[in-house]
Image 1 (cartoon, rainbow, N blue to C red):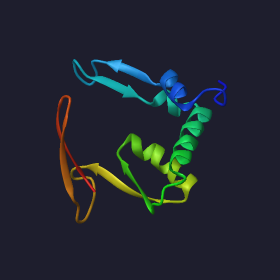
Image 2: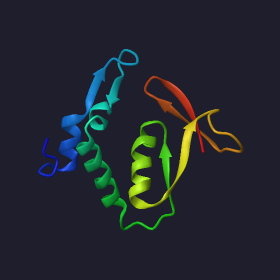
Image 3: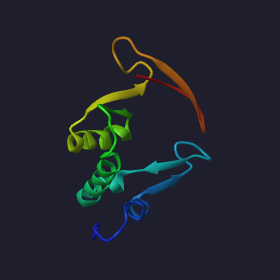
Length: 112
């Protein structure tokens, strides 16, 4: 696949997989596996992220699990910035701050 000739939005749309009714009826799972299985696509996406933040003044990337860890780690290397992880409740040791939110199929809590 020639990733150089396509804008990043087209590249993502063409290689993103929607799985209807997973994990339950009425929910569409957004599968990023096709984006990750092709190194050229993964590189193009990560480089586009790096380009999007190149003019921002920041010290760390704040990354949400679990898909965010994949792209965030690669972006961290490209930008030479550290990571701050946001995880589901009970997955981080030490003192944390919590925030809860609604999902299309329930509620959840994240911690930082």
